[in-house]
Image (cartoon, rainbow, N blue to C red; front, side, top):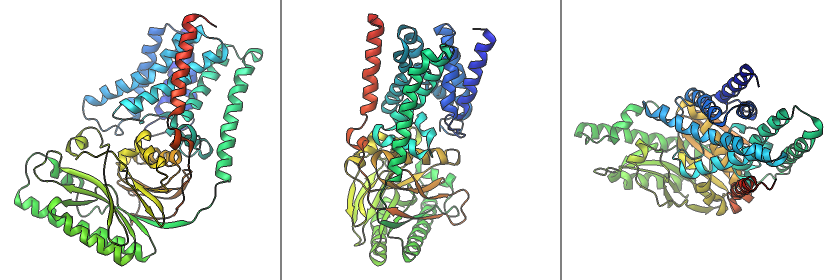
Amino acid sequence: MNTLFSLTWLAIGGTLRLFDFGKRTIPMAIWLSPIFLLHFSHANDPLIGMLAIWSVIFLAALFAYRDVIPVPGIFYPLTVALISVTGTLPYLADRLLYARLPGIAAVMVFPIAWVIMEFITAHTSPYTTWGSIAYTQYGDHPLMQLASVTGLWGISFLIAWFGSTVNWAWDKQFDWSIIQGGLLAYAVTWSLVMLAGGMRLVWAKSPRTVRVATIGWPENILGRDTFTRLFVSEPLSEKERIDFQNAFGNLQNYFLEESQREACAGAKIVVWPEADLLIFQKDEAAFMERAAKLTRDAQIYLLMGMGTIIDGNPARLENKAVLVDPSGNPVYSYIKKNPVPGWEAQISVPSDGRIHTYDSEYGLLASAICYDMDFPHFIRQAGKAGTDIMLVPASDWEPIKHLHHAMAVFRAVENGTSLVRATRWGNSTAVDSFGRTLAIMDSFSSAQNMMVAEVPISGVRTIYSKLGDWFAWLCVAGLLGLVGFAIAGIF
């Protein structure tokens, strides 16, 4: 192949990678990018080709992930470099096996390797499923339904398979007599997936709903910079402690008053964002009495995102979700299992790792907190338990508000639960068990910073919640088989 053309395909593929994950996602970009990168790979020496592909993925990610991955200084490019290595591995697997396998078998190497790469990363990386190409398809509701069967892995497979199929046809100079079988196999599979997803949406029942409200963070009470002072090593001065107690008192009054207002407007469940109710440990019991009185008087369920400050403890933040029922009883208190790597992980009290549930008149309720929702294998606990509504306190920052919201929605589809996500500094949202938006509120543009939605109280059972990552394990078996066939020269 002409060197200029070869570099052109590399440049096009790399440019498209700017929009496949991160702050600015174009859903179609990830369908197209592998076509050009694979074509470049097949035309070049494996070592040179992989170095070049790693380079363009690294450069694209360096821009796309800026302000998305919260890693400071030199650690940011180092983290992106490592992520780019994992993104290059499926191209390496394809380059080494493609010529040793015929037709459909050769085409399957790349999508299978891609799923395995994402699957391993999800279970070993502190950033878990961040970077999964399945998330780019948020909003394509028929395609999203595939997650209820295969998890993210089926969607990622379908996207990567498209790229390898088109590139294979390109390699065969689009000779219809050669490529018709491969194209037909993909077209039929894609059509069945989209048809089944559409049918699932069309035939979905309309269950009873419950009015749910989320209460946003009041920006005028406690600033973000002031908040971090609670977690530095130097102890608080007496004046600082008094100032914080006053601010915490104002926060408590604000959330209780706003919850009362939403209850008067008809809300039966009220949800607060992550660690919004800040409180010193010695003051918690007195506050819980006030919260219990509110739920009894208003006859509501109150899910509080609480940040309890424990003096004299290096892990001084108890980041939890506490559900209080209409009789004033705290029915569960869940501590965040997966704090964000780095600063948050260092200051957080460990969790027992168990998602708690409560069987209410509005369905089976369960909670996780923010970053927990990025771990499909962890949230599957809720699906296996038959959860109807997930109540999720969260806290984001502006560059990730759309992306992190979308990631959480996939957990609802995977497990067949409605989702109410109350978010400080981001998108609060309510979706049904099919991922369809019921309400959304951007805290950066909303004047009142509240969200109200009518949320279905009956979830649906899904194959993924029962069988888990069966599709990913099938891909592992498939790659081992293809490698064995290639080595043995069976084809």
